[in-house]
Image (spheres, rainbow, N blue to C red):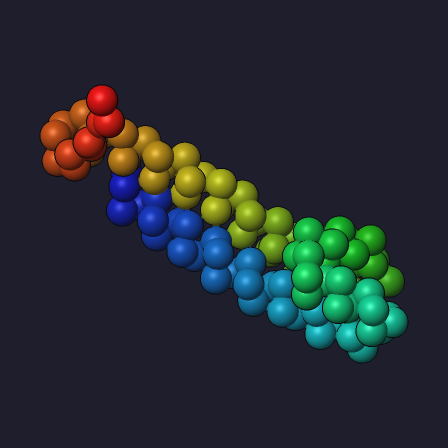
Length: 99
């Protein structure tokens, strides 16, 4: 589960990054530059803006892919955490506790 979690985290993160960049390009082309700069500083704003404009700018498929990437990342986080806990319990990874 540990390796699958890392793989899903990586795929989801790379997909999210690509979608974020594509939405930023649309923001710069179709809205005020300040809105796009805000999208650079806060990717959540770019995500919300993309869904708000998905119908008028034809971003629906891109936003669905971005949403799927976020879900894949969440599943990867859970699998990574479970896999890490299993490795700690089996003694494969040593955890030092402070007194």
